[in-house]
Length: 186
Image (cartoon, rainbow, N blue to C red):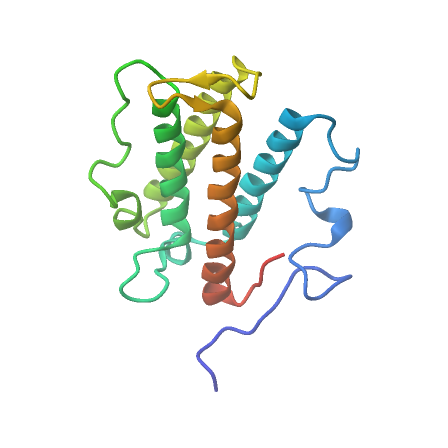
């Protein structure tokens, strides 16, 4: 008997998919958005939702389960890491005093991702709050060529960077989830 979880999917139409295409909340039934900014926002939204889907249905122990030594990466760590980087990006576009790190020292986002329901709840709340704060700040700057903050970063560059960060970590989440219960990504 293998100690590896069996591969499975909740999709019924295509057994190798995460969700049936007709029930996939990431699918935009209205077609693709018009314009560059709506397209970037649509991709960002899709990757954010993908990360949440990868974490659905897991208990705190499963969310906090580390990948392979010596890595401290876990699904919960990814949630905390992305909350931290959303805050960092808000610091990039500001001229104000930088906001402090959410979790303190470097790598505390992953190191502090422990199997405790209170940590899980707080981590999701941190992510939602930081996403909303940066989204609101950027909504005031719809010109993708505008340069912001002490980093003098173009809104377009930041948007692409955000998409890239979430996309990369969704790939990590695919592998982490498969190690937890065999469920594969889509």
